[in-house]
Image (cartoon, rainbow, N blue to C red; front, side, top):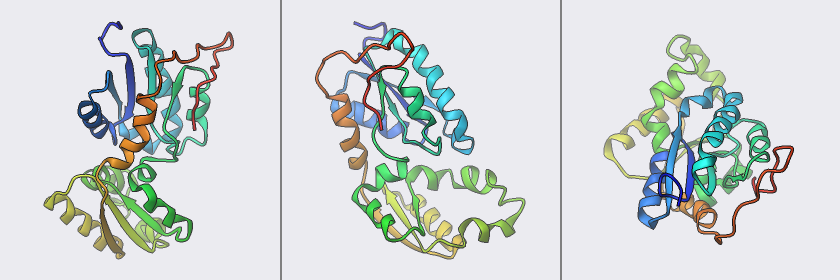
Amino acid sequence: MTRTGARIALIACGAVAKDTATLVDAHGWDADVHGITSDLHMTPVEIGPAVEEKIQKLLPDYDRVIVVYGDCGTGGRLDKVLERYPAVRPAGVHCFQWYAGDLFKRFDDDYGIYFLTDWLVANWDRAVIKSLGLDRFPWLKETYFGNLTRILFVRQHPDPAREAKAREIAAYMEKSLEIHDLGIEPLDELLTPLVEQTDEPMNEPTDDGSADAVHA
């Protein structure tokens, strides 16, 4: 038995931590969720070091570590971190792909799709407008969004206020909006196989700090 009583540590980006915790409760997984601020998406080179610090802190107290992150703009740096530890992450480049499920295949034929999730809609003003400087330099809107063709809101939890905000975002971008109620099932389908794998212990780090853990 680990110190916390749970066998698995789920290190989750703040953008998916709440839904990850919902899945833990729904399935009764023997796991704890540990969040990392989603603000790091504005400086993705810092994601790997932040995750590594968390892994080092948690490994003594858990049998397994699952990192609930995509590549998230790290350019493979996050996977290089995971190679050094007995830790895995779901396949995918970012949480928009996770939440979109099969809809993400549309991106193969239309690179102009912009994906919204509940988190991004709720945090739009802070995470996009202010972080990209659009509140100070509004003329940059065309630079950032001019090549988009449409917006897909892959919605986890229907909410009238959030839907109104999504429509406001689409109007701001001057793009058409599609709303798809996919819930958190796509995330569930990615996490369940990792959490509910056999109870065989994960590979221990080698002398050089690497491990034969599966990662994407």
